[in-house]
Image (cartoon, rainbow, N blue to C red):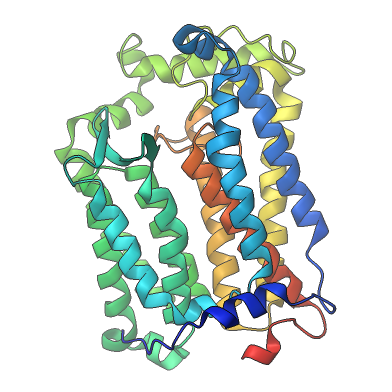
Length: 394
């Protein structure tokens, strides 16, 4: 797993950034769908966060203001940069980005910097603001993984000692650090994202089958030794056992979804967001959407994420370079699987994991990182036509 790191010259950075794009244009349909989700997310957050914002800060728009300030604005800066800068340059920085990923995950355990919320040490405090490093690691680790795997041919990947075991080793380091926080939801997202990139690079299905079996065994062990995780799983299977405890979240989400029926109660008219539904601005925001907008609109949001998966994988398939292909596969898998985890938990087909709904749930670091990932994906979509912009850098 050695990387030859070339010099990263500042003048090349600005030269690449200022290049005009005469031959490629972004996938405007893909970009429009992401834009709709982002705008709708702010609208949904303004409604879902009104009651809790007024209760906590005497400002019904407190959460949406902070989402714009700490998530949308820095996210748009990263989006425009990554949508126009030569993404292939990051292949040279793959190993430094891996080190950054490890430092970010370790920083949550540093006294005075790391911050605890409930049972999780997933945040750090920087200049009075909370940042969730594991969200950033989704992208930085993906850059490393795509860069490393793009240098391997299928023969090397199929080799147990030169392909599969090194991949397992570095993935396990990331997984162990996330388990220590603990952040099971992000761990699952990074594992699934990594497996999809490994498979897209040419990994063997038998290796993935072994790893999946090992991963499921490890996940069950983690659940068994963690009382609150075991309680979540038990309540997921039998929510009626603890209706006022852990099962309260699932039951209130079901009430919100059922109250919406076909066409909803109307935007801003949710009743469950008034101190009944836990985390209405976070992992429960989809329940508020269902209650206010109804089944038909909510099903449309689910269908939109499905369409993004199809469109994103189409970009990956048509990308002319392997590094871009693997980046696109990883970004699409990350966003769609995270949406699946969030919505699946709220509708009761998956246990609660606490992961936010991409572009919609409150969380500055999460929105910022999602927009950065979309910037990379839009950049890659520019390379799918005739004469790719970055082909001269191969």
